[in-house]
Amino acid sequence: MHRHALLTLLNEYQTPVLAEAGYVERTKRFVMAHEDCFNTDLMPGHVTGSAWVVNPGRDSVLLLHHKKLDRWFQPGGHADSDADIRRVALRETAEETGLSPEHIKLLSQRIFDVDIHTVPANRFGPRHVHFDIRFLLEIDDRCPIPGNKESHQILWVALHQAVRYNHNLSTYRMVEKTRRLFI
Image (cartoon, rainbow, N blue to C red; front, side, top):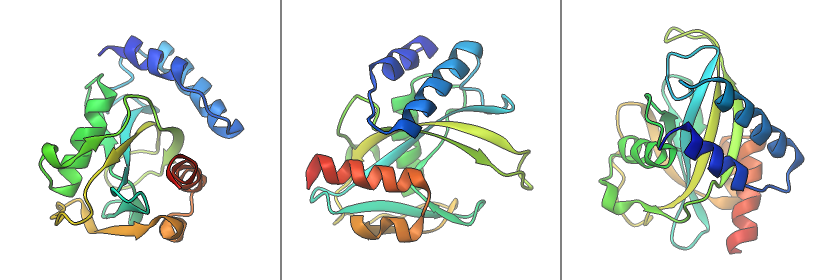
């Protein structure tokens, strides 16, 4: 997958949420302007891949407490120059949960959500922007999740409680999308 494959995914993606539609257009412009958009060292920002992980009952989501940023997030991270953003989301989910890939199911080839957020300057690097492409995944919530050293804790959280852990607008948006899809 080259950046043109990501542009195809973005062009196919439709959202009724006005703010997210703006993120999609802004992400397209960024990707078109930066051939190296998947390079983690590209500043002032780069493309990242994330996963909104639901259980088979679709009533819980998987969140992790990120050590570096001391906040709750869905699994995801840097592309590390990998242009296959679906593979990035799957890889990051496997790494951050400690699960082997056969326990992780991609529910759709299509984008689930697009977000743009600023990562504040910290001891690991300067302030920068993540153009985050998110996919919908499933993990059986009966499966033990060992996690890894990047997180303090990993929890299954009731869908209606997810915004208590992360009250970003994108979390509200993904909760509502999940409700519309499955409940």
